[in-house]
Image (cartoon, rainbow, N blue to C red; front, side, top):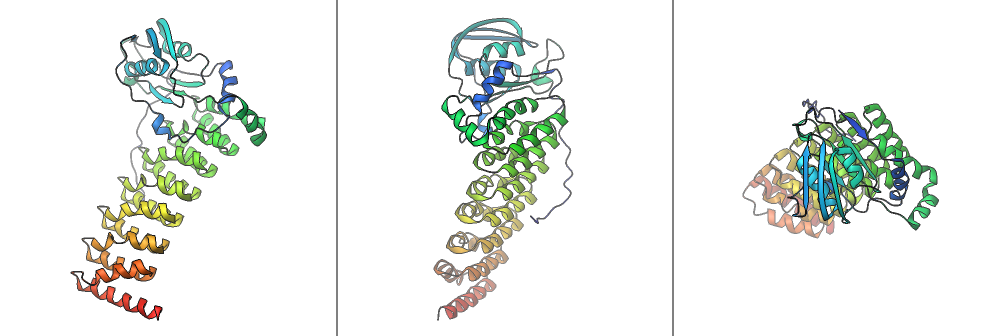
Length: 390
């Protein structure tokens, strides 16, 4: 895809070493359980929606954290409530792909956080990326970010049908690759991303949501490329997370990946990119939308017609010329009200190119524009369209 590019040198945010202490991997039993979760893709879930914002603890729950030592007294509270309170006090980031609504009653006395999580999530499929505090007075959030993923577990007959579709080898590979995405070494995580791209299933795309939160920019960029290669609804849902990445390089790569995937889902996702702070990325999103085309692209492009930058509004008008059709003509009604007379005149020209009843009606409205150049252009194209009908 050809697009305007400049060197946008931005300081890479130092996320620190995410794995400063040690990474707790799934127990062997959880690896077996991990095969069950691969029975189906994460259903219509945006990874951003799985990031939990915690509230105050319920009355029947007591949690105390000193350094990385966790004390818990829980009486008939949900696993989710318990994890949320631990996260609130420790700075742990939760990414849940499972509701965790089952109730638990337990007591833990000054257990290290990884061991506490292991007991709370006994039987669940999860990955913990853990950073040990430097002292007993330091919160996890004051050093670097620890993250806990809890994955969905789908069991039963679906697993057998998946084996027929993918083969047991593909199923067996994804579970350990999830673990590899939590490895301390960036090159190991990069290899896991590459292997998931090679598998190329919805399950592999869902697993890549973890890689889009990686502290290493190159891993995130590789994950974006992998999702563009895999394609499909799940990849689109996961890829949307990259459109809000702090680094412009990742957001740009995500826009290009949506161009590779195409379709109505990609067009809808790019609505986020049209709100990017970087005007160049907004312009690139417009170009991709013009390539995708269709009703969704037309609707999403409409918001670019009110962008504060005239260059972006102009790019949107040109995109409607590329897409064409009655839908594009109707969308350009907004452009005929633009404060910039030059853009109104360009909208008139595009309407003349599109033609049709909607374009003629809007061109007739432009005959009363306050600027003579707009009125003259409208009259010229109306005459041309009229001669074509005869």
